[in-house]
Length: 354
Image (tube, rainbow, N blue to C red; front, side):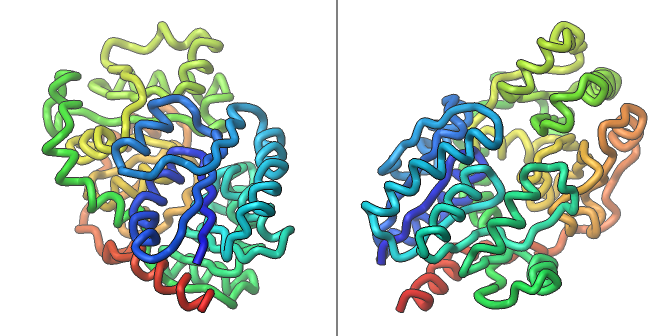
């Protein structure tokens, strides 16, 4: 069986790592890297640290508008599909690479399998939400991380080929959590004390591209104090464009983007996480770290239902208040599976192509 995997961004790499290892026990996997993320800190370091094989095809798309990226990916994926002739195309999450891989395969009548199907934030202003919906509706196999995702697909009339596998992110986190503690020195290098700092990430266009939202967030971080911010390249660009870079208070420790092992170590040892990332919300939940989300909606609704995540948007006062007062009142449950999603996905792929 030949599986063609399409990835291109940090969240894709993290999700594919445990699945790729599982697939290669008895299948042929061909990897297309679209080049959506191309900085070392957001790209190659994840292949290096997570043991992902080098891509068979690298498209080198780079940055650009959502339409440009998706269109360029589609054009180049088309030819690779024709030459590789895979039995199925496997895509992950909600990036432009995800959508391009799914659309390219569907238009050439190659079955599509979507890992992380059925998630919805119900905010169509988010490009990722459009990617999720369209990918789900052209997929043949839909691997859902939660019961909520299963019900959502059913409400949209998608019932064939839908399976509850659990979340591969749990597989990834559990496989490296202890390793991260042993092998990374990110805390010592940055002079951080366990459970004494808040960890922040900001990269969503709704926050970075708005002066009002970004300045509110910067002001909130400065007031909260002792905030560690691994800065995304596009976030740094926007901070400089809006003349906010120099306004980052001394209480905000800006560091370069970090690899997955360092990020897990930073998350695990933070007293709180402030983020607009979907993946980081989930990682915080799995690692039992309180999370304040700088968005008005989330696709990972279980983190909120279980009381470990609070949505505050970009409102300065809400961010500050939540950071000071939000404390989960209960322990987390196994909302995202038992850490064996990769095995279930391999078995379902084998059954589908048998």
